[in-house]
Amino acid sequence: MVTALRSPGGSNLLSAVLPGCGDWTQQERPAEINAALLDFLARIDGPAPQ
Image 1 (cartoon, rainbow, N blue to C red):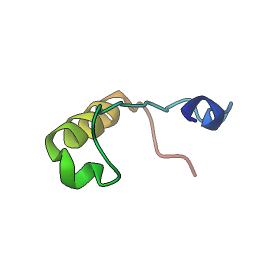
Image 2 (image 1 turned 90 degrees about the vertical axis):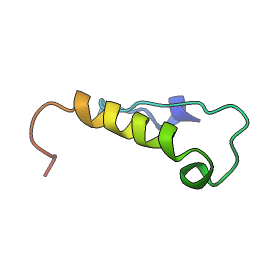
Image 3 (image 1 turned 60 degrees about the vertical axis):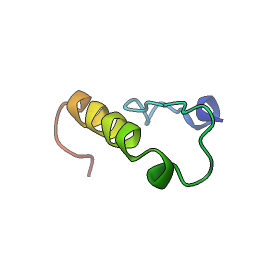
């Protein structure tokens, strides 16, 4: 599914797989979600798209 979402306009996409995690990822694995978000934010270079 992630591959299908990739497009020329979506160059800053990352994915993370959390084995055994259900639909409430933020509730079930908050530390892993925060780490993935911080990693993503650290990679962003430049201003936000307009």
